[in-house]
Length: 345
Image (cartoon, rainbow, N blue to C red; front, side, top):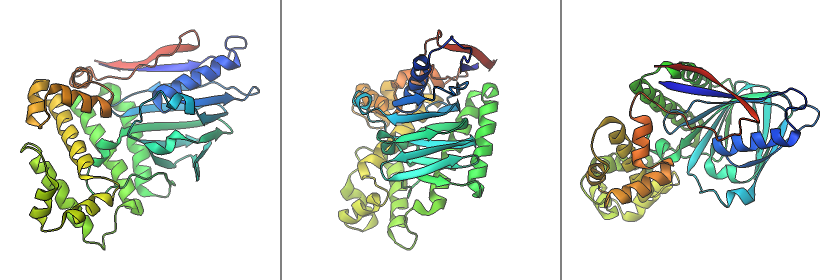
């Protein structure tokens, strides 16, 4: 059974003060995206809504926002672990103006924005009028495991004239509406397809490494070789260099093309393999750790929690069966009206 819960801000005069509404949005931002300081217009607070429909480790949120301004809270960020994630925002109605460092853009209807997690640590946004969007937060390791040669952009804004952008909007709509009816295998397939679409969009925009160089082909071979060696023991830089008849410096350059190191790619592939075992086998955590060459279950647990935010056991319990799972919002029900959107068993 999958349950999606709807949270709405009450517009009845006197029910909620301006500060309460701002607190509502700050808590929603903190739990679904990133800690932000929110300021609403006293003249037009509007009716707000936040829907959550997570797909395993992909955090999906539907936002219906009144006019507001948002600012990254540096003091809050000091207490939050530096998540290695990628943010995807799809616009449906109105527009949102974003400014992060020296990167400025506008997200409107039919557009798509992809940002590396580091960009969200400083900046602001402005919603001048009602704005509807859906956001998708993806672990960077999941995108890295989707293929080689992928450079995660600091900020990539694409318009509705791009075919893959339209395809992403359409598919995200279908996943969102169909999620309550999906079995576990279908949810896993939908997750894989969403990641592949995002990776394809990034590659198609030219942020992938140049095909005129020999390094991209080497990088592809290195990724395949790492995948084949994951169960064989430690993966050594010197072995990869000898296998491909190049220097260790060239190996470093091949990984650096996409801002990676050999260690980060090995880690991403190893965690992706662990995740598959958690979802699709009955192996114990200790056996999975041994299978993928972690020192022990504790070592695997630390690595897994750092990337996915849950222990390996918690992840399996939440996502390895038809119970599915959404990440609940810890929001005061005196401020919000909560209702069940729908469920299927």
